Structures are given as structure tokens and as C-alpha cells.
Length: 243
Length: 354
Image 1: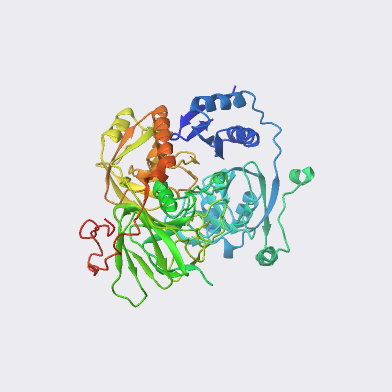
Image 2 (image 1 turned 120 degrees about the vertical axis):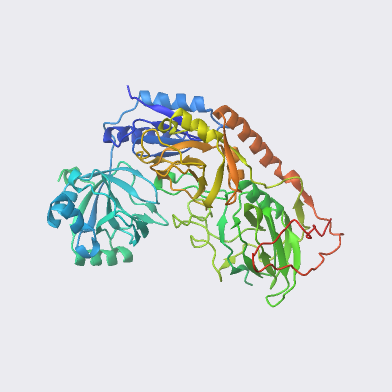
């Protein structure tokens, strides 16, 4: 029996909330419900927005009442299956060279680690994408090893470039575009998280492995990606995922 | 033959907007769209467009536009303003008209929209629309997301917006009759979704209080109350999705109403959400406006939404022709007020047709 509550978000949306904190099990339920609703195209359900611990469901009150919508969702939740959800895995090249990682040494100092150890620990796990939000294509990837969770900068930077790899609490982010930011920047990826024509590269539920690359490889890949000679695809082999 | 609207002066914040985009919030692309969708629809209907066609949204201070087409029919709907039409770029004196009507303008003529009064937003409808490709199903500009509209940004001096029609259709001009676009001092909301982040007494205080609209843009409207709102249990929540009209209360306790260009997700508790029927009136509120919030039930909000939708369906019936037989516009010397930049649209500028 899954515990949840339905909260109103105005008269055209409800929030189906499964918990208050960031948790993979909770997030898996959110994503499973999102998939159910997304695949059936039920009349009156306009749009869904999965986040860490809740699913926002936009609806057309002329087509479905809030009570009928809540009942419909309750039916799905009763039968929800989260175990065998297929997911895509990505290997994303990331350059941790100090030229692209202005806060790497600071993060290392705070953690009492060398920069090399920070890179090893940060790139040494498979990240889960909880949600996309805030900006187009911005994926929240967790969970950053506890020792690398650092406070925000005292003074935000006016500009960090597209591709900046940042630590935000327990989340690792690759910013899709140049933005102001108070987050610690520990690297950069040459891969576009957002293409105006194609949309977002990643989606909630995907898995991500960071592949450390050198500065030289970064520039080389950036050129090839720009020219269309290199395309980043999800890893398909199960063995690769285990590796 | 070229057909453009050339922006001579962009105004404070002029952007291309339609009724917004739906279906991409899960990718981080918000809905955007006109802050006052009722005025947008009316502006389009006045020039014979589909009500959801892209139009120019003008906030606070209007643009100056040169017509680079044989002719084009424009309309101006929303807050009160004076529109001056000059015969050419050198002319000092033009013809002044009020808004809420359509007008035919010709190549070389300059359309100047002055300060807008009594509301934040004004829409310029364009017969046939702009020849701009939609991004994710809409031509609405979302600056923060760098998506849509004209080059994903607000209009700038020198922009040449391509028109779909090289010349206006041969038909009469129209005006709106019996509709006003005033902001409302009372905004109705549904409490929540994070009502449980506030004590009952604090919620009661919120509904008893008057707020002043502070700095405001298409992303959010900051409100100032008599005092900050107190959170019952902290102000950080694990980010969740943000509906239009959400009233979030950040750490400083001063509420922010999230508007069309809001981020799709955020990490502050939301005490209440403006009902869909009141979003257009919310979009008209100016900096300095005083507002109060009134709590309604979801059932009440749905009834009000039905009223709003039936009003929107009825909108064409508020359009009346401007008689072709009436006297031509009386050219008059415009009373420039260069010091304050404020034009009082209530005095001395009667509709020339009346």
C-alpha cells in the first residue's frame, strides 16, 4: 500500500505527493505513475510534471472533475509496479581539469580530500535522474557522495558556461545554458543537455555515469559534437551498465 | 516586397506572446504566454485573427514601430494608453487614438505607444500574425528558458519582425465595446499546496492582509505585506512543480506570485494558488497596486472558470464596427511630457469617432 496525498495547486492542477524528502523509492513511484498517466492519454489530463517526491497533474476541469481525477489516479497507484522499469544509461564525458573546475580545489579542501580523490568519488558511481526542472533540460542527478556535499558560494557568479558540472546539495547538475549560479563548479561536459530543436538529452529515470576526460579530449569532443561528427547515445549493453 | 514591423524603440519589455505552450514542463520548459490572455484574445479578434495568434505584449512603456509593409492592420488592447500615428519618421505631429480598437497603417508610418495607464499590460494584435516559427508548439517568448518568440528574447531596437500578410485586408476597423481591462484589487486563490508549512493564525493573517505589488516581471510578482509571513517548519522543501499563479513564500517571508515565465520547479512552500479565472486580472496588476487574497473552494473556482470560458466564447460579440462615415481622426499636437514620461490618457483624448 503506497502512502500518498493529493494537494490542490489551483483549480487546474493537483499535486500527488508521495513523501517530503528526496528518496529513490519515492521517486521511482512518482516516475512509474507519470509513465502510467503519460501512456494512457486519459481524457482531461493535460500534462504531468514529475519531481523528486510528487507528480503534478494538470487537468481540464471541463473534461474531468478533481474528484474523478483523484479516483482515477488512486486506481493507478493501487496497481503500481516500480521494480522492472526499464531505464537508459548514459556515459557523459566530463572534464574535471582545473581550468574548467573553479571550485574543485575548494570542494577538496572542505572534504579533506585531494582533487584527484574528489574526481574519483564524484565519477565513481551511477547517478539516478530524479527530475528535470528549473531550466530546459536541467537534470537533477543524485546522489552526490556525502563528503562532497558543500554549501553554495557566498557570492553567486554572474555567469557560468553551458555544460558546467555543479554540486547542488546532494544533486549533481550539468547546466544546459550559460546562467548565473551560486553553485560549486567542479567540471564541464562538452555534451549539450538541451538542443532547441530536439529538446532535452536526458529524462527522469535515466542513469548517468560521468566519464572523466582531459582538457584536450574536451576540446576535441566539443569540436566533433559541434560538427555533428560525434553523437552521444545511451549505453545499451547491460554489461556496460554493470561495469 | 518586404513586409516587416521595424522596432524603432522597444519600450520597457515588449515580447511576442500567444496563449502559451503546454506539454513540456517535464523537460523544464514553462508555459509562458500572455500575462493577460483575455486582452490577447480580444486584440486578435479585432484584426480578424484566431484568438490564440501571436501578438506583441507591451509592459508599462510602449514601443515605437515603423511599418515596412504596404499596409498592416494593428489593434491595441489592454491597459489605457495613447497611440500616436506619425506619417513618417521625420514627422513631429501625428494622429492620436486610444486603444481597444483596430487601425490600418501604411508603409513608412510610425506607431508610437506611450506609457500605459491603469494596468501593466497591453497587446498589439497584428492582422495575419507574424511569420515566426513556433518553438514547442507556441510562439511565446520565454526569455529565461531562451525559447520561442522572436529570437528567444524581448524585442530590441532595429528588429524587423516578418509579417505573414504583405498588406491589410480591405475591411473596416473595429473597436471593443463594453469590456474593461482593469486589474482587480481582489484576487481569488485556492489555499495550498503547502498550506501545512504555515500555522493557522498565519494563514488567517495572509487572508486578512493587504499586499502591495513590488518589483514585478513575467517571471514573478513580489508582494510586500505589513510584515513577513512566518513559516511553521522551515522554508526549504524538496523542489516540486510550480503551477501558474502559485504564491511561494521564500525565506524572507515576502510572498512572490509566480507568473507565466516562472521556473517549472522550485523549492519554497506555496501558501496558495491564484485561480485560473483570475490569472488575467493578476497579469494586469502594476507595481504599487494594492491587493487582497480571497480563499475559494475548488468547486467555486471551477464555476468561475466556466463563467470565464463562456465570456471568452462571447468575446466576438463585444466587437463593434467603427463607422467609416465618421469624421477622420483629428490630428492634434501631442502633449509631450518629457520630464515624467507620463501621459494622462483620461484627459483631452476622446475617441475621435464618438
